[in-house]
Amino acid sequence: MHYLHLFIAILCETIGTTALQASQQFTRLGPSILVVLGYGAAFYFMALTLRVMPVGIVYAIWSGLGIVLIALIGLVVFGQKLDLPALLGLGLIISGILVIHLFSQASTH
Image 1: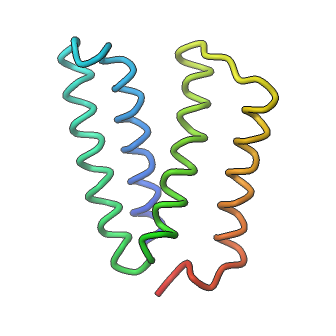
Image 2 (image 1 turned 30 degrees about the vertical axis):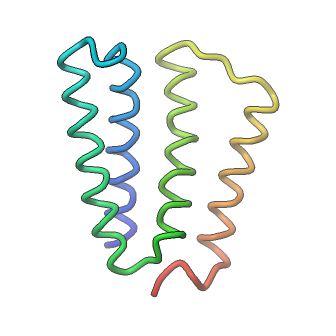
Image 3 (image 1 turned 90 degrees about the vertical axis):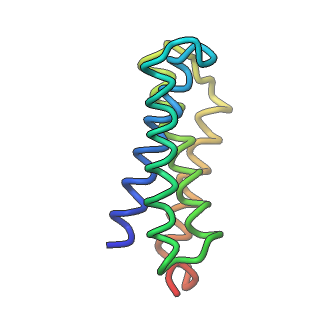
């Protein structure tokens, strides 16, 4: 269940960050409200995850997957370009998350 909470937290953070871009520096009301709701829900579900996983591991997975998802959303939705070094860096982030998930004994209490 804690991985479901973490996944929801990542999705909410990604929605909040996407809305942050769409809010145009908080000048648009709808996206600005979505920023607050997205981040509020993200922190709530991350807090639920922290009941069973250490904060360092939760934050590494949460931020890492959030970075990758936002980079992809930036590419698809906002037309932002990713060059080869950016793609390699994103690949390293995903690799690090896989190493933590597959091989670390610290991923749960």
